[in-house]
Length: 302
Image (cartoon, rainbow, N blue to C red; front, top):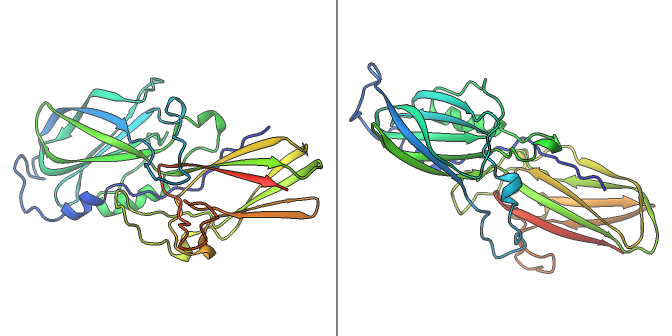
């Protein structure tokens, strides 16, 4: 059985609170832009658990595989949203679920926003000089399509406050995508050959985290083309295959924009519309698929 690791560029903006503070402060307590003072601080990182939705998102991500912290970008902005410094840290093959007391240099500043972007795999990124443009850059962060790199899921987080010498700061990281597991059971009574799996309404843009009430995505936020996979060879009756995918969360309110799976084999078509709650919920069904969640959908072909 072949598993396909797939992602579209995941636009995941995790720094909403800092947006509200940028531009509010009129002066710096610890420095001015003309004479920045570099200080030493200590950073601790941990990963947020998947969102606790009382829905079909009941299976947690496997932390031993998907939550490892491989490399870290630290980008600091002042109270006016101007970038003070940036630094990339390659952990030289070391990986873990947590990072504790990691020494980093920052600039002493009041109401500073320290942004963390993890597992980009790219030490040569040129981050924007201002906070709003930095948020837009997060739209281009994506996971690798290589199965061997599935332990490098992009995550981001932030810390907001006054940066002072020898201070310790901690931040929680949120996964910048949704994971979808499709469990496909052949209950047709016959062997299916080279079945085609098609996904429609796959989003390429996302919402601002950590806002709990999200605005629906505009139609322009979805890929115009379908994604197609093939279950190559014979798919015997009574057997099961599993595919899993990573893509941007789909925040929508109506069925026309919900992510849809279509399976075609032997001139027969099966189709299911994905959503946070069960398809049996015909009234007020929630079609949204949220970030930092792991959804398992079972498709019985009969």
